[in-house]
Length: 93
Image (cartoon, rainbow, N blue to C red; front, side, top):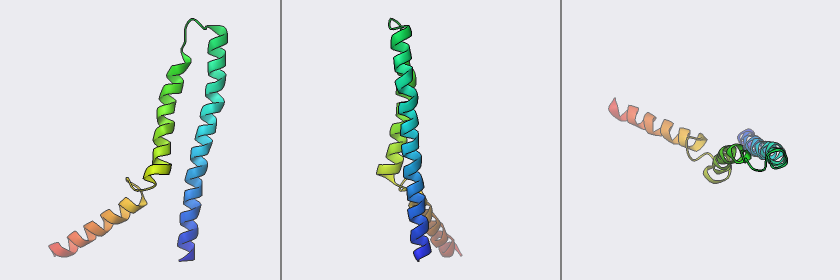
């Protein structure tokens, strides 16, 4: 029981760590890109393409980690589907 709780907590910490690493990398790459774009060619803005599309990825990652938290195609969903299929198999025999 304690091992399960530990593993669940460890997995959750890894998810959070991965998200924050992704967010930090997003900022660390996009801030210099914005500065480079505004300094070298302010008449032609291109930085927003990277910022927008990578930002969509960040938002989806945040939804997965903070809102859905394993509910959509995660561990809970897997366990629920396994139980459903086991029940279905036992009724069909």
